[in-house]
Length: 109
Image 1: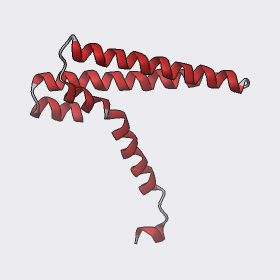
Image 2 (image 1 turned 180 degrees about the vertical axis):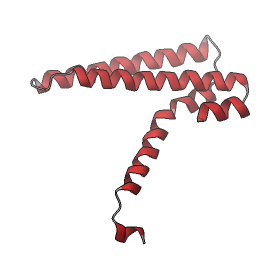
Image 3 (image 1 turned 45 degrees about the horizontal axis):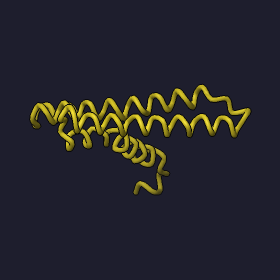
Image 4 (image 1 turned 135 degrees about the horizontal axis):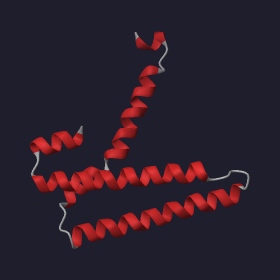
């Protein structure tokens, strides 16, 4: 939805930066979900180290990507940050919808 609005109303450079930021955050979330799915929870400490280690590696890689994109590729930083908000905004909308769907009938009135 944001990409459609951005492509219609914003300049081309902003839209490209928004798309790149969105792809970065969605790829990070997808890799996180895969890491948790592959973890064996029999060895709790080992699984926790593996998940947290992967998190910090991905965080460093995203930081380096953001630095390189802004410094060397001259990507619009505002569009990039707007693209990075795709995941948190989606989670907030999802939580609000879950809250609304789980209300009891007496709370609705």
